[in-house]
Length: 100
Image 1 (tube, one colour):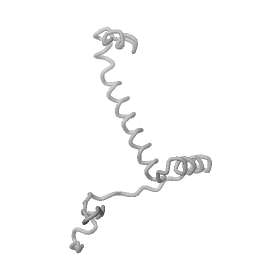
Image 2: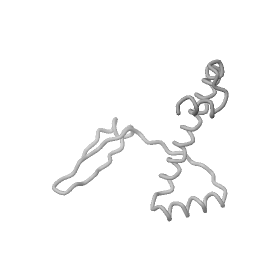
Image 3: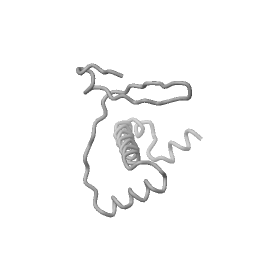
Image 4: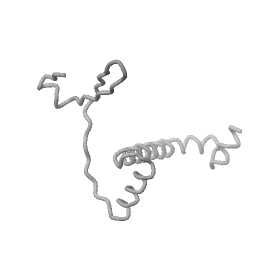
């Protein structure tokens, strides 16, 4: 499939084939990131990749997504703590008792 030069840098073409024909899917740019891993972490990542059949990149992307979600949760929790304390919720047990 021909892609105009002005579009090519911004889009990547992913082709998924099906019996009886093919489907072309488009996604927006992907970006690359280079990180340095110490040897034990690199070896552990390699073992996890081999054990699960997932690529190293898939594992790292999943870990990054989880970490970013955790950081967002912690930030939101810190913002709500004053309101929870004002309502009498001082511990997680207080919250669990109220919703159980």
